[in-house]
Image (tube, rainbow, N blue to C red; front, side, top):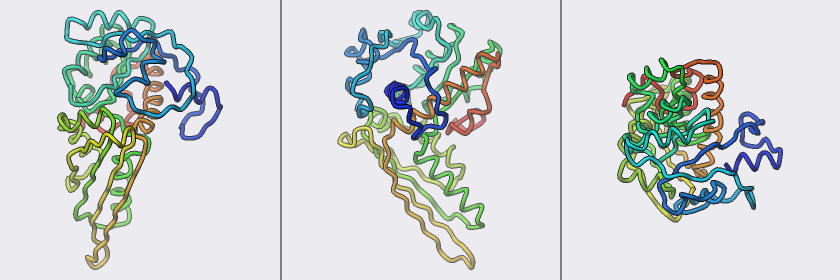
Length: 289
């Protein structure tokens, strides 16, 4: 939300794939934090546990009041009703809560809107759910967005480069540390995310260390990648990469693109999974759950 306001105000094209994002409008919002419910969205996004820095000094009121999120299957109808007038429901809760993800997908189906699952919980990878969206003529995008320049994207690119240049991979690992609410959650509910990261790496010789939550990092993520390989004559090649990024920034630009893809498919009547989203996801349909 901050980014949309920032690019509208500045006209900058730094860090975005498609310069014109002025057509993105926010129609409704949901949260489970009591402090956020009932507030205008432009206020709610700055409240804890959100810890992303300010991009703009002041946001104009959005006119969207944050509503209570789903608390169980009985709430699906209420949330579906609140989606009236929207085209795309972006599900961006912390990973590791598959029942919640499925409930929001059901609300999207009931409301007749496209659904984008940015978490590692398997929604688009579930053939039955994907089939229902396809039959309803509704796009379903997921699972788990690949950050604009995150650990998985960099790791996958380096492993591809290794193969392209004829080197033999011996072993590889990645370590991820962060201070967002998502990282805190992943220390307890990280299994689906670990599977998704392995899907993104595309090699059985990659290990992913358990996620580390360090509150003082706030919205920053620090990652370390190691690759051990062999070249000509079985000589050793070793590569270590240190990556430091604003984790939510990496997601925001991809979210915008996924919303655009979902909205375009909806307007064209193309239900199910739009293939053009594959490059922006860690675990598209057909990858392991």
